[in-house]
Image 1 (cartoon, helix red, strand yellow):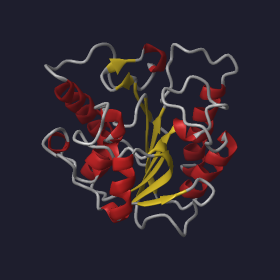
Image 2 (cartoon, one colour):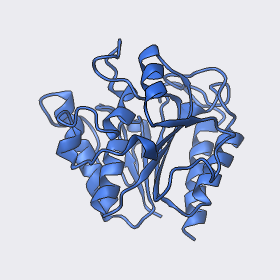
Image 3 (tube, helix red, strand yellow):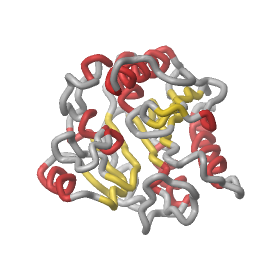
Image 4 (tube, one colour):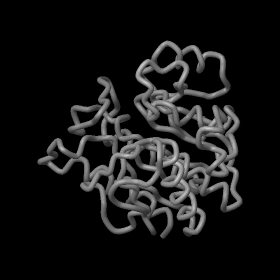
Amino acid sequence: MTTIVVPYHLDEYLPGLDGAGSVSSGPLPGADLWERLGGLYSTVASRVAASPLPAVVVSGDCTVALGTVAGVQAAGISPALVWFDAHGDVQTIETSHSGYIGGMPVRFLCGYRPDLISSALGLSPLPESSVLLVDARDLDPPEASYLSSSAVRVCSVPEVSSSVLPAGPLVLHLDLDVIDGSELPGLRFAVPGGASVADVVAAARRVVATGRVVALDIACTWDPAIADPSGARERVVAELLGLMGTAGS
């Protein structure tokens, strides 16, 4: 199994995440954020498209999933999306108070403002009905409003089963802040009341067991400057990667 490492939080280089399989390192070229992310995610898409499936991508934020999905599409596959996250990630530039792009990737994947980055990646929009949000326990009012009227579905971690998954090939995305922060130190946007590591891994295992996962996208959304003396973060990533190793064996 080949793991593609994207050692960035948006365009911020994270040397602590760097290693074998990294797509780049150091400052990214480009005049503005969109140009820098477009170049980075185009590289991710090319690497995914050229990799044996299922592809595995490990990064520092959720927006890298745009490159992962674009790469799967470039390989000739039209995937559905299973998105584990404490947040909805369905903000827009118009609705977000902070303007944080990491809170918008699901909207981009569903066709919002393709001129900003999706068109440059060759990314085709996913139908809302092909998207399942898992957990999404922390929603801003605009996100809750959007989800109440959209075809995107939401379920809890324990509810994940073959009966609730969208049809077809799956991109499985896991933002590790879906896990309760008491079990995973240093999360940038920790939200109380999350599932345990064991429950999240078990739910991911149920998705992988369908045999339909064509890409696993892991967002390591912690601050690498915060120590993890127990090694909890490394262990959970290893467990998730182990699921794919078993699936491919």
